[in-house]
Amino acid sequence: MNNLLSSTHSTIFSSQNPKLSYYPSTPLFHIPILPSKKPIITKRSLITTKSKGTDSADAPDRLISAITYFYPFFDGIQYGKYVITQFSPFQTLIQPLVPAIRVFKSFPFNGFLVFLTLYFVVVRNPNFSKYVRFNTMQAIVLDVLLIFPDLLERTFNPRDGVGLDLLMSLDSTVFLFLLVSLIYGSSSCLLGQLPRLPIVAEAADRQVL
Image 1 (cartoon, helix red, strand yellow):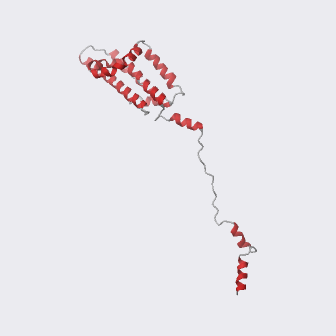
Image 2: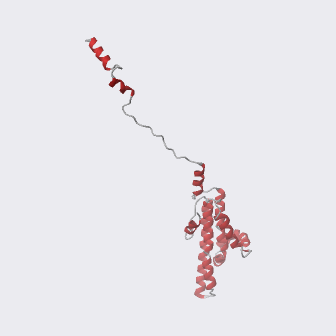
Image 3: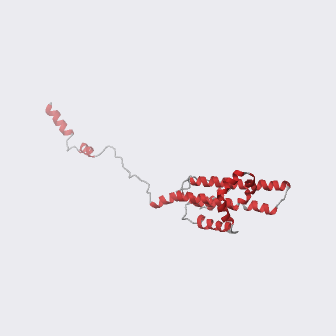
């Protein structure tokens, strides 16, 4: 009996059996391993991604962007003649800026020259980041909007009565809007945030590619 079992065992597991000798060398399940596809990050893609980001900026970009909001404020300071003379806190607030305002107003074409410089040297210059170009364009659009109250003053120049009251209200509103835009825009830029001014932000988006 032992001889029979041993002979049977050797016959089943011997290498002479072609059916059973094939399977040990071949796995029952073959799972192909595909090569992993990792995204290739090149230096060019990093630069492109960084240049398109508008939610943050380095210190020079923040400073340049903050300074640009002084342009429409200096150009429209005359609309605050009623508010500044009637309320002393505004006089205290504007007093440190008086020397710069005098230099800006010393030459009649300073405003136009600053406009050309900001638009062609900064906004249309791809060497500046999109953050700087967007904020500069917002300041330019805000200054361009000052044409409308200026035209109203030149067309309707009341000396007294209700017309004068309306003119004072219009000028004061324009001045306060410029002041708020200056404080909000400059402080946001210094903090590295992206200010979006009402009315002008969408126009600036269309101009900055």
